[in-house]
Length: 230
Image 1 (cartoon, rainbow, N blue to C red):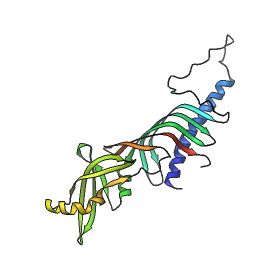
Image 2: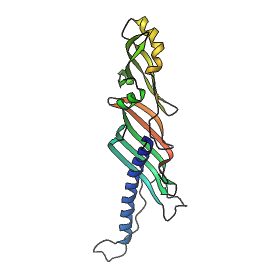
Image 3: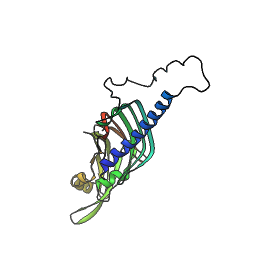
Image 4: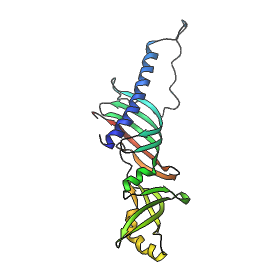
C-alpha cells in the first residue's frame, strides 16, 4: 500500500468513525423520548452555534453530513513516516457517492526532522537553528575528498513545497574554501519537498521550525478524504 493511499485511508477512517458515532446518536435520539416524562413534548433543539452553514439542499437520504469536525492525535504512524500532534478542524463533511469530502479543512501537524532528512538523502540530518531557521548537515565528496557540510537557512513554502533555502554554508575550513565549495554543494543541502501523502486539495500554506520538527499549517476546500471506491 502506497503512502498516499495509507494517509487517505487514515483520514477516511477517522472521519468515518466520527460519522458513525454521530449517526448512531442521532438515530437513538430520534426513536426515543425522555424517561419518566409524559408532559408536553420538549421543544425542538436549536441548531448548534458552531455550525457555519446549513446542510446542502441536495443532500440525499443515503448521504451523511456533519456541520463541524474536530479531530486530533498525538501520534500518527505510517509505514514510512511519522506525524505528531495532528489537529484537524473542518466544516461541511459530506459522505456520498463521490466519497468523503470536506467543504473546508484546516490541519496543523508536526513533520519530524528525520522525515525530511530521509527524503533529502545522503545521510543528512536536519535540526532547528537560531532565529527560526533550520540547519542541514551532511557529508559530500568533491575533488576526491569528503567534506562535512553544515548549511543554515530560512524556512518557507513555495508552490506547496516545504523549502529550506541556505543562507550560509560552512565546510569546516578557511572561509575562502567555504565560499568556493559552498556554491558547488548548495543544491545538495537545499530542501524543497512536498509533504507526502496529502489528500487531494489539501495544501501546505505555512511552516515554522520548532524544537522537534517542522510545524506545518495546511488547508483546503472540497478536500477528498476518501474517494469513492478507495
